[in-house]
Image 1: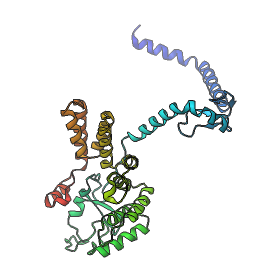
Image 2: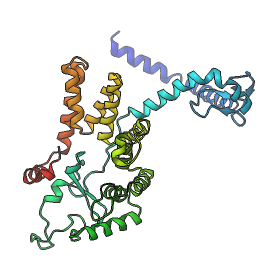
Image 3: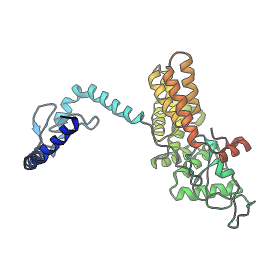
Image 4: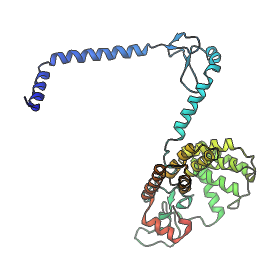
Length: 341
């Protein structure tokens, strides 16, 4: 008998047993239903005393979520025995989140729809409409409805005239802050931190604004706070590397590549080169050239593998392929302030 005949015969045999198959299906469905019911009634075991309880009255470890207790007293008694495993699991869960490739820090340019460059000079925030626009679209000429080139400097998105004074810029920024714009809060904090745009230097006010922006999830604000604790006295704040590390981590997980680069440096100085390379790799994918240079240096000195260096080069090239455009190149060639990689 040929193979095709055997397949046909098997098929015929299956068709002749439809009633048997229905019985099996019914049985499996009943088993599934019974299992579901049993799962609903499943009992949890207290890690301290061994008593059983259901999910309604069980007390779970708040940190690792791994063990359960029948009450708070049992949880307290078991704490010393559980602490090491709990700490280890918490660290594992933290690293799982920390070393995930984060989403881009900024949305695509709202005009050309290309991914936004990670380099600060590759984009501009506009206080008139609150839009962040890439360097290429900022530099490109603006045309009116008849197709005539407009000589007046206008926002390329909302066509509002660009502010002509620091006073107007601060006025618009404050208006955006009142509207709950996290980017505007972060920028205003920067002006206070550096005493720019006619504002007196005020680190307390700057930190308040950055914390406000951070609460709204703005990655750059987390980075700014981390940088203050990292540099310390030059900013009028005591150096606190632990806090700097914490805020850099929050910024990095939100997609801020410079924060990720700094975390890599922290780990490298501590001798944790494996973790440093992980941070650099993620930063390279986000367009951080300094991280690529660090991996190159580690490779040349025998601390990174050829595969790791190759992967870093490929990742950076993929990033460039995504963000490059003729319009952005023209802007960068026109002025160094428009450099985007």
